Length: 101
Image (tube, rainbow, N blue to C red; front, side, top):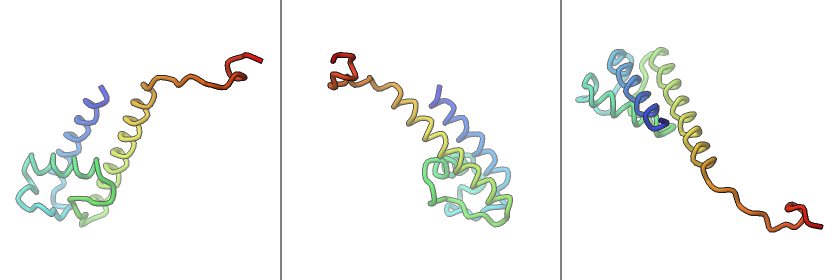
């Protein structure tokens, strides 16, 4: 489910990048208004922090990039927390922790 949400957010924000393409300078000019270019930019923005594929031209573009990077960071932390919670508990070697005196 978590991976599904991750991919869904990438696609939703890819459509945002395509719709608001005039607010960005794209490093990849051919993908500026293409569907694959939006997905690529969305994936890069969500999985890296600080190295964006897009350069905002306006405050709207900067806000969208900041929002997307923050969502990507939170989704990464949620994924990490979920997988850490699935690890088995270690057994304590401490006699006091086990209730023996």
